[in-house]
Length: 467
Ligand code: FAD
Ligand code: NAD
Image (cartoon, rainbow, N blue to C red; front, side, top):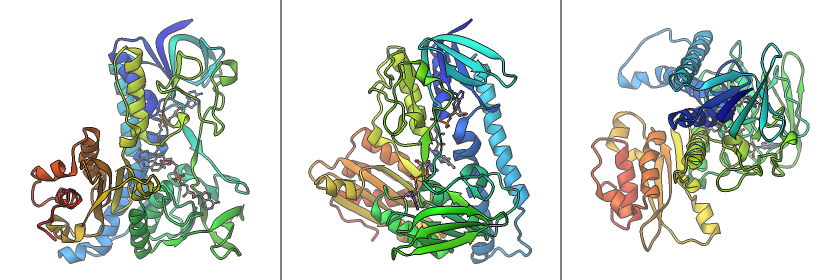
């Protein structure tokens, strides 16, 4: 029997980070993964391939729509769909190979196969050749992630009625696609396909895109995506889909409450993801689940069996790669007797549309609901010199701060490179720096970050010198 100090099940950003941190701290570590590549959803069919396609399509749309204004003229721009997808596959491959290297470097034992608990102490790994490898570990970390979920009446057949996973592996460019769900996956996928000329329709149940986001941002996002040519239909409730071989159909109650139907080459179901615990053998352990299928954990991320921990998508909370990574380091360092902490309210979220969206902390709606008083500092990219130079003038930064002490309560950005700009706001919130202090440091000119300085300035009650 192979014995380990720590065995991690699942090799996504939660699992691989946990395994590396565990090995760094001197524990004999195993990483169990059922697929033959490491990296989980994020690296193989999530964060990385979507960003590769978002970047490719961004270059394409710039070439056909914007280069002329820069005085760059060329003819015969066309899209090689196969090459675009091949490059995406290469990016994924480089990342998974990088993980193989990191496991070797850190002396993590990688065991390929499905890990299943036999009891609280033992996990059996069923490999590709159906052979059994039983192991014992002093501590287990479950990091088995999530899978796409669906809604009643919609059977995902992976042919015409697909999820993001199949959309990332299409053989040909679709003429049309209907996306059920205007959440994060919905708007990122819509951006990819719309930019290359596919007719995209989003059917969203709620009144706004990405309903949990600060309302000002989702309103601005809807405006921008509609202008780009995406048809956004809000308050539409889908209840049935059908694969007709050559196309697919979707039925829904429209915003007037009437039955409606649309057809397209593909229906992409993006209505959320569910925790993945299938074949994990949890019934052989004392590990309990919550009503929504996530693994029940305490504040230390211990399950109901104290030496079995759970992290990442499988535990609930935000389904984000960096949240899984934070939890990975937290659990291993806690096991090691250190004193790590996670402030869940200070985990940023990013949507990689263009312009990008990035948020941390409370939205204005949440503050209103909790009757918390706030100052607002809002500043548009339209008057930022760097944004004008780069033709990136859409969007704004919005800072919400405490009117008495100036503490940052929430920061929300829609604009160019919002994904990078949010990092300073996260640092500001984490270390309880006031809006006035955030405004008082020097920001290089001309940069997009000056928009942040102005938003902090206005939130702290001072007048901006730039508007
Ligand atoms: P996962 O990454 O899901 O990994 C779990 C792993 O466990 C998988 O490899 C699975 O095969 C393995 N496994 C499951 N059961 C077993 C078993 N019994 N035995 C062995 N192995 C098992 N998040 C972001 O932060 N930024 C983004 O830009 C982003 N983009 C996304 C785009 C898409 C299209 C999708 C679908 C998701 C995206 N996410 C993004 C979310 C992100 O991918 C997840 O939050 C993240 O992957 C969760 O990490 P995890 O380690 O918990 O699980
Ligand atoms: P989501 O929860 O973000 O959005 C699902 C949407 O589907 C919601 O807006 C919901 O109102 C809508 N919906 C549900 N039922 C419907 C119906 N019957 N008809 C019409 N609309 C309906 O989920 P997702 O977009 O599938 O993403 C899953 C997870 O993946 C998210 O939690 C997200 O955190 C993660 N993710 C993150 C990123 C990123 O960080 N950039 C990118 C992609 C995915």
